[in-house]
Image 1 (cartoon, helix red, strand yellow):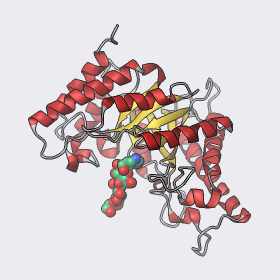
Image 2 (cartoon, helix red, strand yellow; image 1 turned 30 degrees about the horizontal axis):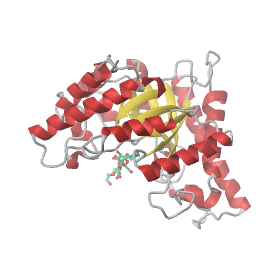
Image 3 (cartoon, helix red, strand yellow; image 1 turned 90 degrees about the vertical axis):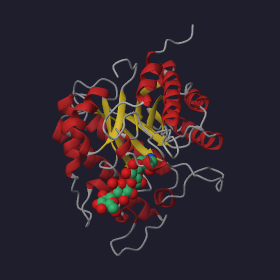
Length: 341
Ligand code: G3I
């Protein structure tokens, strides 16, 4: 998709780095996200020893060999994180007391620096040959419901450290990726630091997200980007996707579509696939018209057979046989569409 005015990516694992998939991915995309294998649990063995999953090496080496960028996902999340992060040695939960807060701060900083050191040692300093160009530093920190005035998810990170865990995560990531392991040639900040969230096209979540990012920027937290997952459906108006990007456009940040998929619903019929093609065309036209604020646009999967939402109807651009769908034709048409004069 060389017509794209921004890097296009897909979430993958080792299965998409070899054979026909490995060839096709590098043909269609210029960026990859590790669907699961750079999340906190992927860096440790069962007893908590730092032991990076071999899939991390496979993804990084594939990207470097094919000249693809790597969008890191995710340094801090409430999910897929070993339980020991939040407990004492004896298994009792950390409290929000000062000593336990320091324990969790140290664990957070050690995790981020260990990840940065491993990736720099293996694939070069950041901004000087390393394919990794961004991280979702924190993911899904906004509360799904309306239970709390501050709109924050009551994760274990939040229970022990409060909202400050977000400031710390960005500060440690900036130290590790954009200072300690940044190459001499690195200009500016070689690794863009993102916050990432789902349902940002809905009013309530968007309001809470915008308020949080405003607070972080006011506190001088080094947030470079705002991620919009965009796990949507044919019932979600494309206008709401565009409005989500427009809502943050005045902030001193870039934005990214990080995890887009659009199931057709079941059964998957030719007419539903055609409608999906029109949807992707309209969405990618909206993205093209906002290319000036977009760091990248990523699909949450390479083909329908690997989608976590395949049971809801063929969500992605390629089918399981890696054949183009109307969705791919639509995305390409949207990318080529001239902005209305
Ligand atoms: O690796 C184990 C395997 O050893 C085991 O045999 C198997 C069966 O239990 O589970 C495997 O782990 C699964 C993992 O994916 C790797 O395949 C987990 O059970 C499964 O829950 C996990 O699902 C992932 C999900 O995040 C977890 O929350 C999905 O693949 C992944 O697409 C999804 O991605 C998230 C983003 O990170 C954040 N945004 C939402 C998005 C969709 O939930």
